[in-house]
Length: 167
Image 1 (cartoon, rainbow, N blue to C red):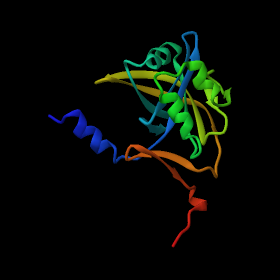
Image 2: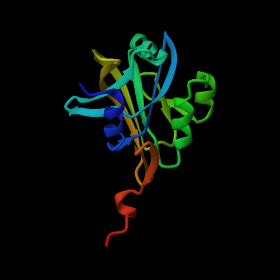
Image 3: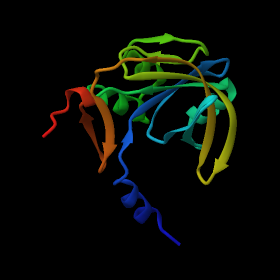
């Protein structure tokens, strides 16, 4: 059996986009930093999002039935830290940026690389996490921004391909 520390060390070498996942509805407001987001299919446009079952955000997203994956830009690592902080209230998390709503009512970040506004279609429990399968109902994206990834237990900025220097 593979222990948690060995697994986590190996996963630190898997670079991932940094996202703030939000939800709003009758169960309240939720927002957390998530790196476990993956495209499933483009017809219908669907992605999966993994969130720890012990997180209060998990219960809110389940009850609201919506979420928005907000893909952070290179200069937004402070938002990733704000939404990852266990001590930060929901109000202080959301006060750190400007938000709007697209279709589902989940907060969409103004100024991010993309906002993928989704309806939760189904869920599976795997170990400590819930895998949410989400159909995208609205998209807002902007090009030309630096990206933000998490790799080697740190944030790194990526230049858009058009701005990268080719040798």
